Amino acid sequence: MFFAMRRKWTGLIAVLALASQVLIGCGQAVRSEGEAAPKPSQEQLQRVELLNQTADEMYKKVMQGDVAGGKVVLQQLSDQVTQIRFEGITSLEGINALTETVTEAKKVFNAAQFSQEEGQVSTAKIRLATDALTHTNNPMWLQYYKLLLEDVEGLESAAKNQQKTELQKVYRNWEQHYGIIHPSLLISRNPSDVEKLDSLTVFMKQQILSAQDPYTQMLQILPQVRQSLDKLFMKKEATAYLPMAEPQNPILWTLTIGSVILAALIFAGWRLSKKDDGLVTVRKPEEG
Image (cartoon, rainbow, N blue to C red; front, side, top):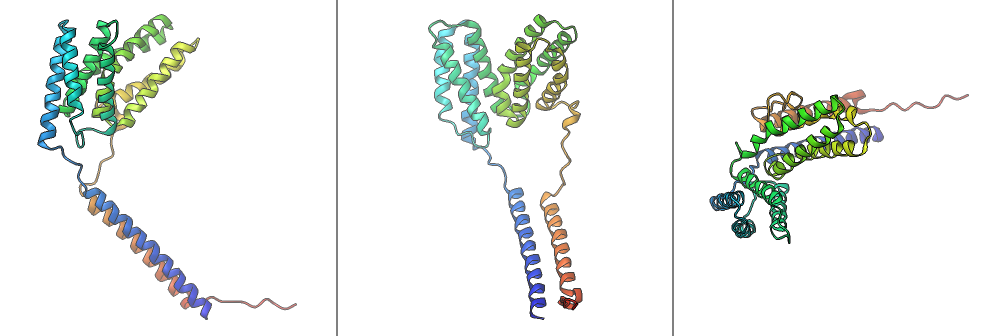
């Protein structure tokens, strides 16, 4: 009898312990749902807007051939970046992308032999990156979608016709166009989505440079490249990445699920306690 009652209470305690874990998990989920993302202060927004204006000034000077003036403005921009708190504006990956872009531009402009093309590319990267910080809904880098899509179509055409020279040429265009908006993507989009397209880009390069017959692999991977593009640029045709509809009241939904699970556990505990009145039959081994 003692062992039967002990088993009964042990089962109930286990059920109640599990139920408490459910309630704790639901409570944590409710707290996480209720936590709002930090909003940038007015001072932060003003500093970022000033940064964007400085980048625009630098871009205009460099494109007009005033390299010395662009270099001076670049230093001003570099000083401004260190004085801005980016919490609530972009992710850690976005901050790193911005600072690395500015650092790379300083290397280009301080090189012993300045390259006009590299200077313009690095300036364009900065201009698009600062614009992405200030225009979250409609940044300028979205204009690159058509250009990148044309690159994908060019890669597909070259692969179908097995034209390796043309394939290499179009890939270089893709690499440059994608590289220009890469910092902006990390500022504006989910870093994991950007990393996926990064991996696809590296794979394409490996196939083009190393494989004697890269055409089959390219034709197989280009649909994934197109889908990643559509997701990053938020195009409706990216049907493979349609988000799941979220409940209108996630906190209420979380509590409802927790209540259902808890009720099921309590019922299971009640049945355990009622089974054979909590007694466990012990049979003696048959003699002989």
